[in-house]
Image (cartoon, rainbow, N blue to C red; front, side, top):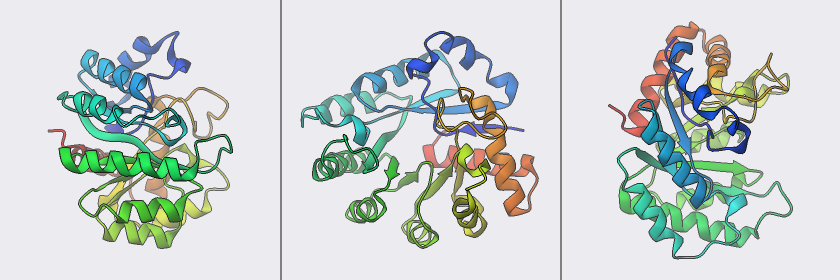
Length: 255
């Protein structure tokens, strides 16, 4: 099985003890490509550094809604400079998160989201969107930037919103959450979704799939996402891995 983990945070402190060893082990586990998105300026720099060290790792740079509280407009210049690196393939992880009550105010999150979507349009890069408990506002912000396309990572929205996003040219990505017993809504979306719009991810070190819940997640477990999607779509795991690999390469323009 050839796999592309399109969203994993190896800059996370959860990997401080064995980061390089874990990454080095991935090719032998069938993980041929990994995309590491940033969540703030420091993690974006770290993502670029990891992409420089491993030929199968690529980076995205951006400021996550939970980390945008100290945002200054000058940060756009730093993100622009980071995005010029040849290993950077997207602007992300950006978006809206209304789940955590201590997150920055909603209007401020939206301002930062708009600014980074404008940067992506300027640079001709796709975006990686985080949408948690903010489905309506997130879609409205996305619609305000019709020249930008991207992927909703760890998709948790409705089938109706999925249909809208597909019409707008967007991709949807799924994590180990699809292996959980309460994943009915995600599986309904996957059942409808065209295969050329699906990507797989781990969101490592988070959202570990069954039967590994309780352990730290890593890209070596992304096969469980492909297997679950394969069951829904009536495909083999190998076919699903191959299709989602090609989808990811096309989306991130990786030759």
